[in-house]
Amino acid sequence: MFTEMADLMAEVNTRTYRIIEYFDGISYSEVVEIMPVTVSATATESAVALNWTAARDWQDNPASDVTYKIYRSLNPEAPLGVPIASGLTITSYSDPDVYPGFNYYYSVVPVDVQGIEWKASNTLEVQTLGIEPSFTEQRLAPVSDGYVKGGTFSGKNFGTEVTLATATADNLVGKTTSRTFLRFDLSEVASVKNAVLRLKTTEEAISFWCEIAEGHSWTDQSLTWNNQPTVLAKLGMVYAKPVGEWVEFDVSDAANVASFGDKQLVIGIRSIGSDTGSFHSREAALAENRPQLVINNASAPVEEFQLTVSSGSGGGAYAAGTAVNISADAPASGQAFDAWTGDVATVADVHSANTTLTMPAANISITATYEAIPPALRIDSLTITNVTGFANMTNNFVIDTSVTGTAALNLRANATPAGDFGK
Image (cartoon, rainbow, N blue to C red; front, top):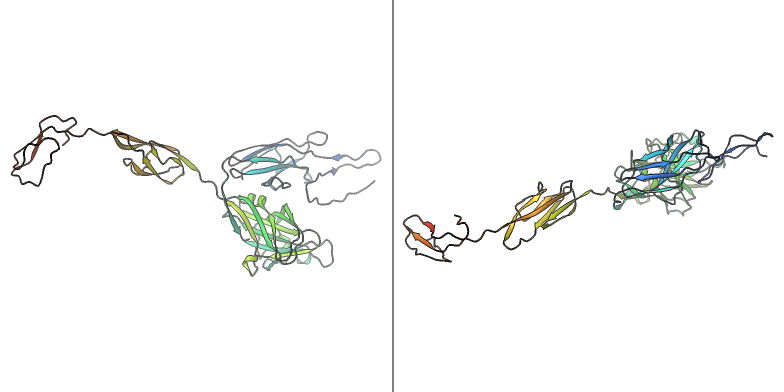
């Protein structure tokens, strides 16, 4: 019979038990387990509404004193992702920090009164509505970086060193635990689909944990062990690399979450095991050796509106403010273009068959209209009076206005023409 248990940190998802009674020769110990919940969701372009079943114990009784923690990931293979909400006492949550056309993966974890996280729910894939934007690569340098050191160095600042150090003491003589932190400003990042942190080694790299942390007020000159950022969750592990090689950490989940809110991303690096490792910092002499955050940066999709053109060309989908060339179709025999009608407030010239239209922030329709061409003027005969030098003329005559006359020239039609005479 045992009387104690070792409390070991679980590096990956495990089922956790909490013993609340022990065997005293009369009754057996009771082992309590909170069972996983089941998650469902609905999505729009700008939010995901999550719902889940209430936590129950292994005997199917409602679990008491339980809160819920929400994890989100962009990667279906990731263990959980990063926490986006905690301390929830109800069985629903609306995630407002999403982008249109993205696939997100959610898990809900019950947390008991002692802060123990129990087994996660099913991982639920949710695709937000809308069109996923196109992506371009963007590279960011950290705005602050540095390492911290425990023990007698807990109040010392190493933020201006040209290297970033990590080490785990594990009670080895002469070793002191060190951790590295980097902070990136995502203010100029529209959205994040993928993000990779790249660090170049200055000595042979061991294995590392990459973690998301919170606490954004520190600078290179203020960071110490005593005020180091609080680690929130592990993002992944990277194994040994030779000197001068790039170590790459997938930080997509953390960067995606950080692209909302205050847009500050804090990443922590710590070694696994008792060896040490180091990387070039942002103070490194050569710029090409400095830390990089490589982001597939997406601009929000431009909203387009529909232009419908009847009896003409130029219709299509356009962003507001776009200058669109529009042309009326060729008129039928006996007709001529008259005007554009419909939603013509932004048409440059409604009486021109070929003109431009400035697209408003709305769907609009315009139509080219036509009118009949009047019949040609027909004169059966023409008599010129009171002017010398003219004779009576019939069809297809020409009047030479350069002739010198002695009086005003008066024209009178002797017969009614087929159309209006005009003037």
